[in-house]
Image 1: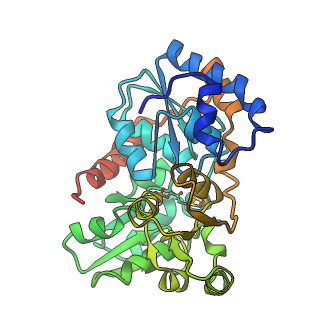
Image 2: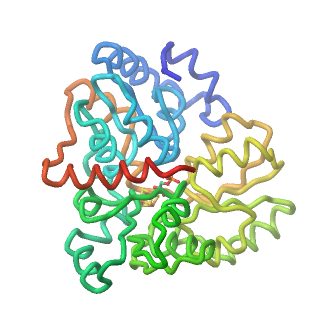
Length: 325
Ligand code: 13P
Ligand code: SF4
């Protein structure tokens, strides 16, 4: 879906999650961004954790990390603005190097990406010679360049099983690694990185939601600790959680993930009650209509990746995209 129209028509879409009193604050930026996109032949790719006015009113393509990577690779626009965090913009640049990729705020990082360096990966390889390295996309291009293959939360099990080996190193998310280990016979050697948003959920939280909201269906992201995933009704990537709500239509649901996700799914399901434990990702929240607008106005914050890093990093990401499932 390519986003066009005027801001007042777009309000209809988000009226359930953005109060009318807040809307005028967004209108001028939305109209300007829609105009700049046409002028620059630009598209905006937005992750599921972006705020509703970005996700629903200026984004052309939305989704989880895997969908955004696939869409970035196919994009024909001259400019791709990545409304998400830095590793997502780097992944878009790796997969479509001839396009100009902009990130509205270069400080939009990720605690997982910060948890590991290329030198750490080389040390892991020395410690476990011959064991392939599966790297979560939530990492820098430098770390991807040291890896055999990437994965996302949407395809991690398929990627691990595609290698046909008894043992893999899976970095940097310890909880994702342990959650995947619980679903496969392949031995998984993990790193100790954590997502600062998902590590905060606890099994006690789930019990308290179930007590206070009888019948609530609990969906968890696989970056949550394994004890949390074990007590949830379903675990999956942000796209899988969204699809679960679309297909099961629970009357009450809680999404154990970033706050904006509930708003964005609620836009499609105004009659479902979303219980909202609000854990914000401070990195995702650095992206605003204001800095999307200035990125497009000034063509600033372009992603560049040195060729020596881009070539091996691209190989690891493309190898992931070739895995079926
Ligand atoms: P998804 O790939 O499931 O969208 O997750 C990305 C992310 O950053 C989760 O915290
Ligand atoms: Fe990184 Fe967690 Fe934020 Fe996702 S939610 S970008 S994993 S810190």
